[in-house]
Length: 272
Image (cartoon, rainbow, N blue to C red; front, side, top):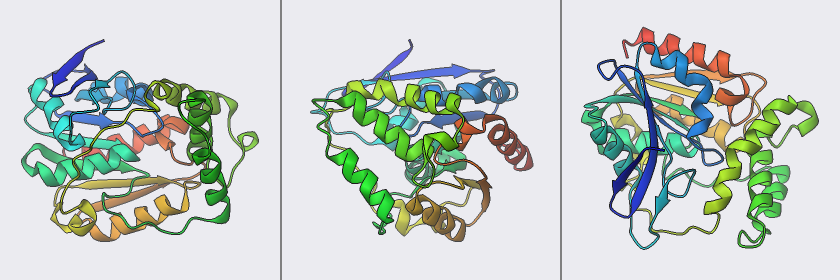
């Protein structure tokens, strides 16, 4: 398992494709690990050099909780380690927030951005639906030190299945996959640490991101992610939007072929 040593952490990363090809950096959702991109790697690596990593507190990455860190700085550290001068950065959910922060903090390193069900950093707290609030109250009642596995399972259910669907409405193979992707994060359930956040946050300066942007969301995602999708489309100067029917928070996992086709079409259209 390749790792990159940075101050306070060993970042788990993987790469595929020709190093001379246009580069992509993939950042996973908070309910997954870098394994969430497995279905995309072969297709993307045909014409790109593809890197992916687990941020601190997730997957195979280990970190010292006493050392403050910035996720966007870790993203660029992976690029530096692999000799990538610039990349299109692709992030799901929490990974999409890191993607936007990276584009603002290191504009000379980012050629394009892709988000999947993401809010920009600094996005205001919006009221949840009654069902969403009930589900999050259920999650917050769990002590991660006592039952981290149950916490991961409930998180995957509310996000990957969605608050307006039940497991019976969804392909059982996808439900199993969603649980598999979040299960390794149980090892980090009690991780703490000081995140150095981007200031000012991305919410206040989306207009500064001039590179092409692909903004995506699933039909059945949470209400706050659906609102953030509209906000990003309205405020990113060069944004294209794609809404994936019949999916929730992980359209790239639930409908991998459809997502990969949309991503490759967009990359080709913009010469990325």
